[in-house]
Structure formats: C-alpha cells, structure tokens
Length: 157
Ligand SMILES: CC(C)(COP(=O)(O)OP(=O)(O)OC[C@H]1O[C@@H](n2cnc3c(N)ncnc32)[C@H](O)[C@@H]1OP(=O)(O)O)[C@@H](O)C(=O)NCCC(=O)NCCS
Image (cartoon, rainbow, N blue to C red):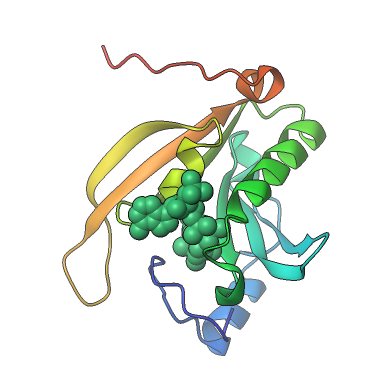
C-alpha cells in the first residue's frame, strides 16, 4: 500500500500512518470489510483486494494491482475470481458492486468485458486532490448472471 502509486484513488499515495489508522479502524477487516492478497498461480503475489459493505448484502470492492503487474490483462482474472468467491461463499449476496473513476479506462474495460453492467454515472462524484472532481461510474454483476453467464440488460426507462 505504501510502496505504490494509485493514480485513480482518492489517496494516490497512502502513507504508513493512514494505512495503520485504517487497520485500527477496521477498514481492512471487520464485519463490513475483508482483505486479501492476490496470489496468482503463475506470477505469485500481484496485488491486494478488499471487500467493503459486507453487512449490506451487496459488497463493493477495491482492487489494487502492484504497478509491475498492471497493463497485462490480469485484472479480468482477479475480478472473475472475486465474483466466484463472493457468490460461492456468501449465499445472501445477490449483487456484487464496483465503482471507479470515469477516466480509469482500464478498470472500466475490465468491468465491461467481464459481464458487469454500468448502473450509474455520478457526475463530479469523485473528489480529486489537486483539481476538479471527476465522475464516478458504478457497475455490478448479479448472482444469476454469474450463474448463467448471461448479462441482464438495464432498462433506463
Ligand atoms: C485498474 C487495474 C485494476 C486494471 O487492471 P489491468 O490488468 O492492469 O488492466 P489492463 O491495463 O491490462 O487493461 C484492461 C483492458 O483495458 C484496456 N485499456 C487499458 N488502458 C486503456 C485506456 N487508457 N483506454 C482504453 N482502454 C484501455 C486494455 O487494452 C485492456 O483491454 P483488453 O484486455 O480488451 O485488451 C490495474 O491497472 C490497477 O490495479 N491499477 C491501480 C489501482 C486501480 O486503479 N484500481 C481500480 C480501483 S476500482
């Protein structure tokens, strides 16, 4: 967390103090949150994955690949493994959610090619430390789509 830059996160360069404060506050593991290393069968440890809002019945995730492993198409496998884990170990969960900054093209492409559906676009909803806020884009995958491999379309009206 402290050795990498996360350009699309609100805190792009987490400090040790911030991470330790988050651990103490339960943001990495408590009834609402859980954290995982991402261990790839071929490459070893490639990143970090956190689930949020677990007690809501519709968890959200935070995915952070180490910079050495970005740009290689690995996130799609991670998102698939995460959905497999969530839906196969949490029977009460019907929706798995993700949110990203509008200019995070790589993350958005991963969602769009993994059976996730864009459900919201919050204009100026993502604070940016040194500039104007950007849009925040929300996606989800439904349990039944995960089960069938189909994509339930969204009707806006
Ligand atoms: C964002 C992140 C998860 C993406 O994972 P990744 O495996 O590195 O993704 P890739 O760079 O391989 O790109 C995935 C897809 O997006 C496309 N893409 C990447 N950058 C793009 C851009 N600027 N414009 C358009 N498409 C782009 C790639 O071509 C690829 O598509 P393809 O597989 O169909 O060819 C990863 O880079 C990361 O962890 N970044 C730091 C943390 C972060 O931003 N996490 C997201 C939090 S929600």
